[in-house]
Image 1 (cartoon, helix red, strand yellow):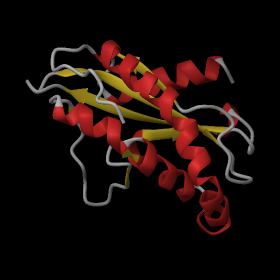
Image 2 (image 1 turned 90 degrees about the horizontal axis):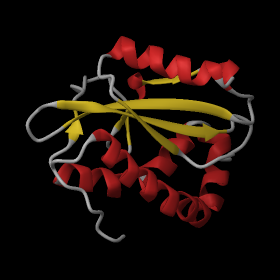
Image 3 (image 1 turned 180 degrees about the vertical axis):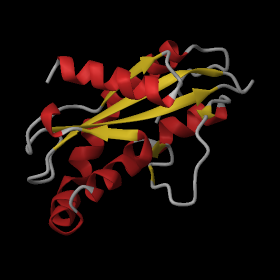
Image 4 (image 1 turned 60 degrees about the vertical axis):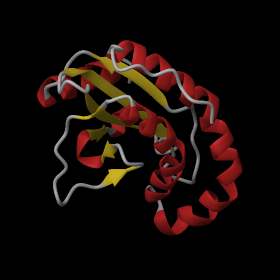
Length: 165
């Protein structure tokens, strides 16, 4: 992977553009290279198989964000389930009315803190997936928002997705 141009002074929007570009360039390649494995695992592991995919997709870009001084502002609890080193399952929503069993959408959020411990905004990471078989009906997507409070983030996600349901 080519080194990304992440600088400590970047805004949440600038970071989001870089992460979105990374996703666009890598999501399909990682999926294609591992599809046979994921399809074999899905009957037993179901949704956890998507976590295995994300464990290959996200760590390289997350590592570069951390090296530039950015991190999740969330304090990880002992019972948290962390996917790909950055997605906390507790900080996600999936609503049946946002899709069909063949095309569900789960949205994770990560409040981003810079090297000065300032909250700069939030990444919303959307993963479209199937509950019927292993399939990503569309590319993973990243949206940035300014909100950093849990209730406001949840309201923003619901307003974004329920308008389009």
